[in-house]
Length: 395
Image 1: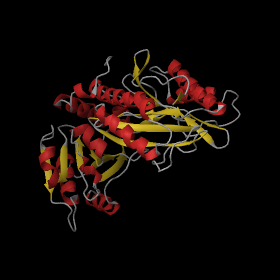
Image 2 (image 1 turned 90 degrees about the horizontal axis):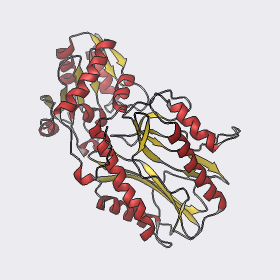
Image 3 (image 1 turned 30 degrees about the vertical axis):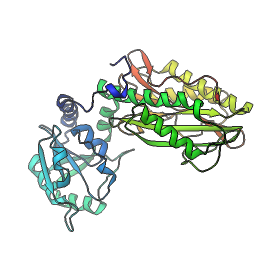
């Protein structure tokens, strides 16, 4: 596992064909043990994970994209012809195309024919049915596909797909670490330029630019707010409110390097900070420390949750956590499975990249959220973010 954080400028872009082949072989071993004949992927992160097909064109919902992985052999892409050139630059060489959008048959007949060619006329068709999965094709087309594949039984493969993708390779961890490093530099520099009188929008714009200056490819997620004596919202876009003395600012960012996210926040106070907010900040910081003390291979998400919850609510008399979960997986998506909740029994393994994100409700409807990014290592965990200050930074 990587031990040194790499800057965005020196990150190796993309992955080797051997890594994609290895990913496919791991999945196929699970398919064989579960008697799954073929798996159909329809979403950007899954298609990219097994093929290397990386494009922002997924932001257009007009066209569906399909990747098939049979029990043996290489993946097969069934995609609109507009993507053939890019897909041919990946390790996938069997690429079957149609002109899309199509008035009556947007690739469904071609997809069904390809499935039967690869897996026969009956068997099991694996797709993800569980949490954090989506179809990304018209529901009517999905029903049409099932009608054309009457001999196939749909089966849920969410568990084996998510379990595989939760454990990152060294090359994946390198990209996440580089994103953390670059965004961290932007956060460290913020007190030198952010000031009373600036609008939230101006702070957001400058912060995004500074992240880009430090080498990230994109700042595709940035939320937060500045509010007097603490905030009550952590997902809002910026407004035109001018920051005033006594305001508390949270910025929560998801920057990407080569398609892999960091996801962490930092809190700042302007001029002064009230005692309740200062204590709430200390408590969430201590909650992360408690998590760091227990995180290691073999520990479950629920155990990590309980370690943080015991700091947030030591008397056990209230649900002090204000955001529903206290962390999640991280990678090609801003949030991935598993979730740090009291009911998630996922066991930590070396190579998992996680966020630790306790949120504390306090005062009159206020909240404090603190987040760090870690990678699970043999014997413990390593921070990918530079640890936040133990006391809230006052600008």
